[in-house]
Image (cartoon, rainbow, N blue to C red):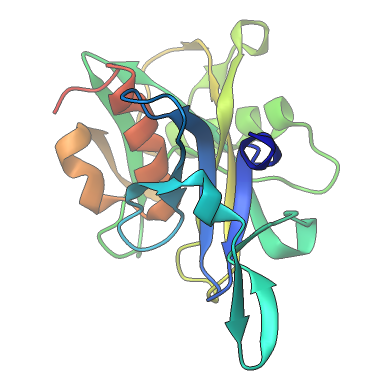
Length: 211
């Protein structure tokens, strides 16, 4: 249906202000005539939902104005925190870090890009600073980009996290700015901020993490 074709994967803003990531449009197996949008919240518990596609582009009235229920959201540079992160999985668990002086949340190794840096330049610098190892840029493989409410930022400020897998020399150790290295399984989902939850959901769905 035409309505289904207009719903593309990406970031959408709900008319009440929350942000969601559309993964895909799926067809109902029983009659193959109804489609559902599969989407995930980018804040709170980051739950994954299904909504009939015919409802996705419905118009709703708010304060006398007519709006779409969900509007495509163009993520402008001024509206997100730009991070590059390392994906390092071993025995079904993934390496996360906890910074010194930070509350109990764990974060993917990596950090914010300096002006003019490429993804790999940023990743090499941040991983050297945090884990005291040198990545091998020629082994880097792009995994994907994940979004979520930026932890500790105003509501609506998103984190954009570009993730890479790569080899490196040596064994990661915590630097002075890192309080702890932790190997997390999927059961540790509540110990990471929103973008991390979306990331762990993806890895677990692909069988890359143990529970």
